Amino acid sequence: MSQNPNMTLSLHFTGSPENVRPALQQVCAALRQVGLSEDDIGTAELVLAEVLNNVIEHAFADRTDGQVNIDFKTLPEGQFFSVRDDGLPMPDGKLPAGIPPEVDCFLENLPEGGWGWSLVHRLTQDICYQRAGQNNVLTFLLPFSAQQTTQRCDLQNG
Image 1 (tube, helix red, strand yellow):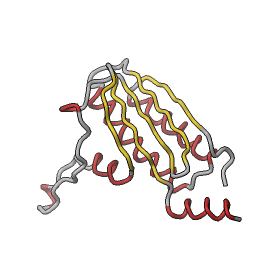
Image 2 (image 1 turned 120 degrees about the vertical axis):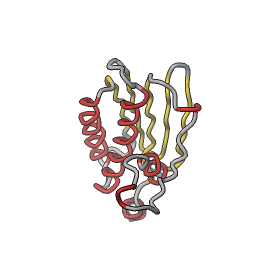
Image 3 (image 1 turned 60 degrees about the vertical axis):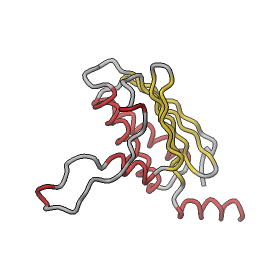
Image 4 (image 1 turned 90 degrees about the vertical axis):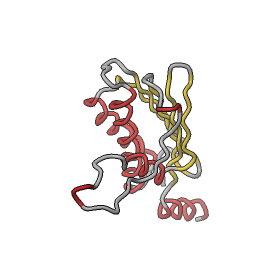
């Protein structure tokens, strides 16, 4: 099953576009050590890439000195993540609703953006945003895939 089922990770980096990929690679490497399936690792990478790119683009806007912390820990039901940054707060102090853009239109009129938060909401559970002092804190659970959950139960019962 897993080399270290109780693994935790804390990662700190300066929030810039060139630092996102190395941060994602570190998280994915740690998730492999936990023994997650490649599907679950891919889901984590997709969600974190969307979250981190939004932090860089919107919370930090024109800043190059913004700080990001990613913490995760393994729980029985999945991976719990906390992403903290010292950027601008979310608009209206709340998480975007995650409603996908309207697609009932001609191809050339399809929106280019607006899909990310919909994807994040769909792939996570217990997603929560709060402003803590001068920091944004986003927490969420990435549940284990059905295949991973079955494998974990089989190994625990075997």
